[in-house]
Length: 142
Image (tube, rainbow, N blue to C red; front, side):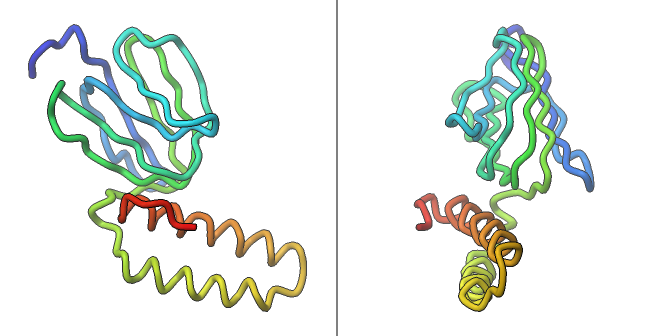
């Protein structure tokens, strides 16, 4: 790995397991205020993360590893970045057809929701599935 002084320690952890623990050159994180990039020497910050894709570049110029997360927190310092995800999976492991079927199913459930609690639950699940679809297709799912 080239330019180790430009790399930092990166970990992505979900409740089920540690998905990644390695040196990174750059990580892009979907924050609620917008996506933000992290490189070695970054100012210390703790941020909420919205559902979206974390992109990890291990060496300058290499293709990013893309991991979908359902939300969580990022803890960033000058020498490391830890993402604590509510749920996480490799973007390549997401199945577009299953996601689209689940969106249709949730839209149907939402149309028959009886109270605000059901509406809130189905809306949250629907937004998460739409974020997964965006991760898979690369286009915003309205």
